[in-house]
Length: 546
Image (cartoon, rainbow, N blue to C red):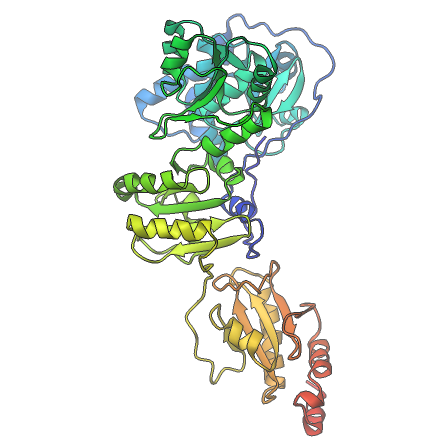
């Protein structure tokens, strides 16, 4: 199951950067499963005349699901949708109990993720039907049939569940039609397709753009057993096996008749990748994780989860318009080839705002129309920006710096403001070090964001404190907009936040309760900014009351 439920509250603490981006992008699909949702028996569903049972108001369904296609495509879609059974409150139990395998899609008509997944689900259903899969593909509108959704445990949308003899299990595969087909085939049939003839091999290659080939003398022994375990454990790639040298040569021409042999085949410039590790399940799976992506992966909402949860923690992301990317692709692939399995190269079309804008906002580039190259080191939650031209030599130098950890992390900052007459000083990313961490004064810092509904009240409190303590040379009262400014030593998640940096220990700021009264805050300041730090007895007398 993959979760796309999201929160709209930004977070600025650069921890587990991949998870942060996933939250910002709303990339996950929420799938709720129950180990045994249905236990008692029921009569088997009569699937005779299935087409009539499946035919619902197609025009209304197309409108509800938000599928906007051309008329010819709509006709194909309507035809394909007839093999996906629409469940109701009354029929859900009999369908689940009456079939050995049911792959269920729970959706809501208003859910954008449901609309994106529905065509992939329908295409997968068509393919599975063509190959004679025993799986019944079904869907339920959770808004229209809330009792059915409740019985199945559907709480988020879309939800994918596989029922085997009435018992559910989580869906853990990818979200494209091909990935759904592979996952379902593995879970309901043989995890490995055996090829013995050239004719079957040609048919297999026509259906699969990416696959794993295993060449063995005999389909037995410890090495073959580890290969089989890897095939069962993997959820995304079709495995095939053969003992025929001529078949293996068609599937993987680069193999020199080596047995046993395992290789990965992809439909991209790096088409053939040979496995050279020890024949252990985990080693084979690790090999696939590091090599399954293309040299440059086009990021979509459907593959974003796999991208961000993969083992390659160094990522270079190119943001460009589609026509510009076409000119960049070849030089990008040439550079990516040098950092294969070490750095993951991604492309995001800036026209896809849901994908591009959250990333670009992290760099303050959301309003820029220029091609941008960014990088993320998710091992230590750091981000980088290539600010020079995008020549292959500069891009390669940028990647080397990322790989060897010699790049300077990028932190957002507004322009340096003029603070001479300000009662409350404005701090930005570029001045945080000097005005807060290095300055000899005590600093009371308000950390806020424009979208924070509680920040206005705190800002008024801070302004009153600034007027009350105006003139004290040993105290700076300041504020920083955390949505537009960053610093590695400013890690704040909740807004507003009040931090007091004592002059004698700037490394350990004191967090003050933002719901404190004005008098309590003033008392705290007086207690911590003592006479020997710049408040005279006359000052103390004059500052007793607000």
